[in-house]
Image (cartoon, rainbow, N blue to C red):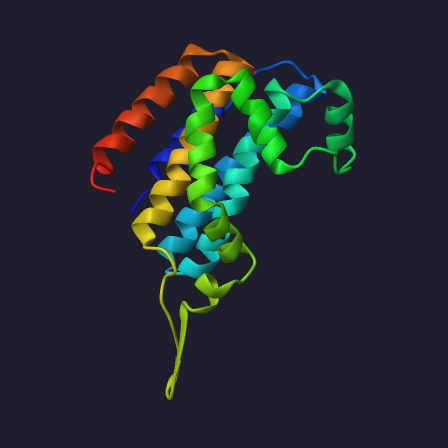
Amino acid sequence: MNNTTGNEILTVLEGIEFDNSDRTIMSFMSHRMVFDTQRAIFDLVQLENHAPAAALLRVLFEAHLQGLWLYSCANDNQINDFKKNKRGKLNFNEKLTQIGEVKPLLKENLCEFKKNHWNGLNNLTHSGSMQLLSYKVHSRGIKIESPIPPETLLSFSERFAISSLAAVGIDIVKCEKVSDCVERLWDAYESRNTNL
């Protein structure tokens, strides 16, 4: 199986130029974390290491939201604090609210996604029961079952990678080549995932 989405994202971003402001760089690097994490999840699923792949889902979601927030919402002081690895006064929900205010088309989808999946993502990331129960102990050793179906892991990570590429194309580089790639990847994603 080939990671077409991950490969196309790397290819379309090769040689892309954008301004070198801290806002742009920090936002792009957050989205780059999404792209890298999508590829890592894909590789782990191919190796049948589903539990570690599931633990990366929250990282992917947070990096996507961080990229959106840094570019569209953060003020200069917040950008500087982020760059210095200082935790700001805003929590994750407040950042999500701010994103919804400047990107109203995303507000409902992101809030609904967080409402439906946040506890599960935390559970998987922090070795909660969903993660630990994937290890089935029996008399002949340990059998590991996926806490989430592998196709769901791949779909989730692919969807957020394409969404991050769309944010990069719209906000950061404003490039038709990137927009065309996003459209092509969404079409392919939807045709493969109509039953998920």
